Amino acid sequence: MDIWHKNYQQIQGKYVMALQENCDEKQRSGVDESNSIEWRGRFPYNEIITLLDVNRPFNLAESTSQDLTVGELLDLPGLEDIRDLKLGYGKSAGADMLREAIADACKVPVEQIMTTQGTALGLFLLAFEVCRPGDEAVLLTPCFPMSHDSLLGAGVNIREIKLSFENGFRLNLDQIDANLSPKTKLVSIASPQNPSGIRTSRVEIEKLLALMDKKSPEALLFIDETYREATYGDDVMVDSFAGLDSRIVTGASVSKALGAPGLRTGWLTVADPDLRARLVIAKMNTVISGSVLNETLAAALLRNKESVLAPRRRLLADALEELAAWCEGEHKRVEWIRPDAGALSCLRLRSDVFDDAAVSRFWDLLPGHDLQLASGTWFGESSRVFRLGFGYLPPSRLGPALSALSLAMDAALQPCDGRV
Image 1: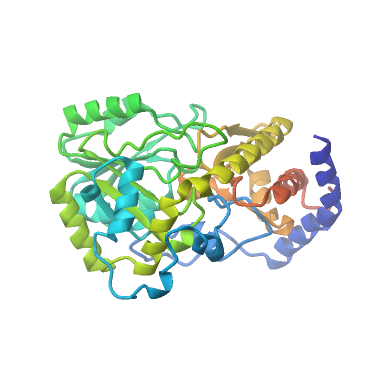
Image 2: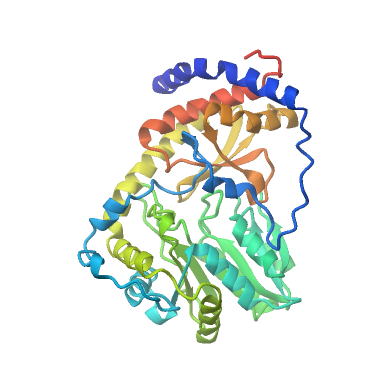
């Protein structure tokens, strides 16, 4: 706690003027932020796209572990002959060596694997190929925005089930049961969830499948397992759900736990050969194939993943404890849900401390504090909720970032008159 207070005091002076500058700017501009050009895209606009364009010094918005470098990747065994790789087209289903590595990790036959450009392409291909006009998909939220928007962009009727912060974002099987019907062709969940990091148990999945048997016999269950391997310290990594039932399709990538989102390499596990063939054809008609270079690098990464994951798990465990200590120190102002896995967690500004105006000021003030957070509105939650990523920053910068977050909350609770 002494280190935390030291960080807090060291950067407090830097931000004393930030509140006044921000308030002065808002008063000078007189901009009505509620007015915006009508969005006409097939896919909804979501501010999560700003993560690709902005990277502030205290970036607590990213949900990945620290980025791998090309040098670290090229040092892995199996890439000694990378200079001889021919840059022709790849296979639409994915490179054999990559699919074999994924099959080993998911404990399913290699023929059930197809690669995708990140999990995002898999989400769209499923929405586009599994559902037809008039079909329904049951989606559990809050969720990764593309999980929702790919369904909407493909013209699917979405029956959204909002899990609650108060219930720790745990599955509500009664709610799911009430929304299943013969029109349901896809049920989409994530485990661990984004933005909360909460995991769904095998027992819950089995109960969900039983409900689908009765009310939606033609439906598939998609489980996004992107954060499954991002565990903490010596915590046991749970097995993939891929081999549990033929109705389950899983998706994941090398982006989050392994820190290689720039490779844009993910996968689907698909037990049904007819669906798998249709998805491969859909992939061929959209992106043709993955990059042979990226898939070669991803295969080497997966073959050597334990040497990459082990130090990251230790870093995540230490970072999670630092975040837990900060949340305890700030418990009068924030609530949080401790994650089961992943480099991310879900926090909420307390309504008895922050009124709506203070919440708005909080978001306005973050850039002046060099801070980035992922707004709950990106995931289908309120702006009072935010996702905080604790694995992206180096350990030496997480403490100062949390201190800056405390200062931003201090400032948000002050009126726009320059007082702090």
